[in-house]
Amino acid sequence: MAQHNQFKLLCRRRFLPLFLSLTTAAFNDNIFKNALLVMLAFRLSEGQANALINLATGFYILPYFLFSITAGQLADKYDKSVIIRILKLAEIFIVILGAYALIYNSRTLDFLVLFLLAAHTAIFSPVQYAILPQHLQRQELMGGNGLAQMGSFAGVLIGTIAGSLLAGYTKPGQPGLFDIGWIMVIVAIFGYLTSRWIPTAPSSAPKLHIGWNPLSQAWRILRLTIKTPSVFYAIIACSWFWLVSSAYLAQIPSFTRNILGAREPVITLILCCLSIGVAVGSLMCESLSRGRITFGIVPVGALGITLAGLGLGWSAAQFETLSGASVAEYLRSDGAYAILIYTALLGIFGGIFIVPLYTIIQDRTEKTVRAQVLSLNNVLNAFFIVAISLLNIVFLDVLKITIPQLFILIALLNIAVITFLFCKLPEFIVHLIIWFSSRLLVRTTHGNLNQIPKKGAALLACSPDGKLAPLLLMDTFSRPIRFVLPRSIYEAPVLHFIFKNYGTNPIIHDITEGEEKVSGDIQNALGNGDLVCLFPSTGTNKDHTQDNRVSINRVLSGITTPLFPIFLQGLNTHRNNKSKKRQKLLSKVHITAGAAITPEDTKTFHQ
Image (cartoon, rainbow, N blue to C red; front, side, top):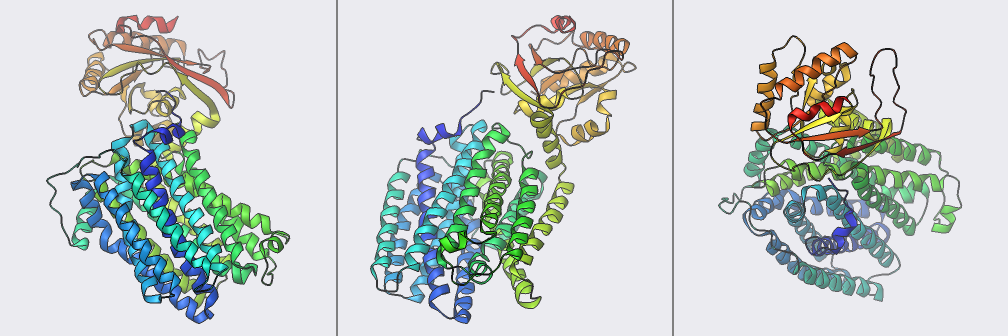
């Protein structure tokens, strides 16, 4: 239960080589792609540029449909570290060909290299996400994914800057294109060398039969994934995120040129704000969730994306178009900083939204099919990106709406789709309420919880009781808890919704219920290896509390499982109707555990 510092992973061999490998891959992918797109956008006529940019987008998306599913199967069948080394070696030869294509202005080779880099990313992505749970502890997954996203977007950011600036200030045959070439090759070689230090990640399904038909295999994995609703809807939410982000990203060149009236460097400035925002948001996930694998912060990210999108669209609609403005000229104009701030916020909330989703997919998927499920996520991401590309054509070219109006429309659609997903999977809302209770209603800290077993049966006795106590424990313990609750607490409106969708059914008791049944339910839960928590002093009035105390103590008389006392210091409770205390907003509650005791000693909680 100790707090973890995600940055310590950067000093561990089980994470750092992988981090450098994925960062260098993202860099090379984006330096080439952005150099090519900038040269197309600013060296050709508008009609030619739009046609070739759309063609380039198609070339970049196609490999995700063709190779992702097979890549997932290979990653489950073979050692993932070996696959990564092979991919990083292939990257060297791809970027050498890319350097030649840029220097000699070969459009055919440009598009071939773009296809190969996309294929490289499509194969690498499920491997990199599937290897993390093998090398990281469960409580490190949220922080590790945050760092991985940060590394990817750092590579995207630096590659975008280098590719856009070098391509923007050069023409074919000038030294700047040679600079892009040798930078890509050096980075690829460095990435390969670091990949050789990645620890082994043995096969999770060595007997897996590889199916080479991507359609039939994708359908098979989809049917398998639907059986776990939390994973399925996490994948849909991921894909929706990439749809929204692509809707904004795809318009940035045209937005900069036609709405802002600025030159190429301003494109880089806006992309920097977005990429830095995603990196910051990704790193925030560890502290916001305290390392727990939870949906709780996903709704926060979703709401933030909508508000930032609305702000960006409104600010852009009010912006007075410039004429070929430089970065300095743009920054001196009214509304310039608002657009940059909303763009950064869009990235920050995007990072908060996406990192928990990837972590939950990794954590809740069987290890024998984990890479295949992650590859399905890639395919659906690509499908959603294609869908928004077609919708953009309809919105901008057929319906003739402006880019700022498109930004506002996407933000509103985000609220509608996310609301639908939250209704289909109430766990989103349950985790949000739990997160809200432990962060805003009170501020919880914890210590001395390492003695609580991470696996196997354990019994907790918590004091004091109260309606807020179970929510604070849910947010503190990474293990699911089966609570022993009086019916009056269980049937409280909000709490009933939470317990119904929490994932583990509580053990309900009341005065009229037989003690043998409650005792049997507790023993069955412990026999199944569950973590069970009871409140020796639950209730809302003195007489009712006393009756429940006697009942709880008696039903535990035959249980030999060690019992750990849990204390919520600072939590107000209602001892009787005459002296009620309100829990102060943002008051501090410290959660600690005592040494194991016998069930008969629960009387110490009543003193």
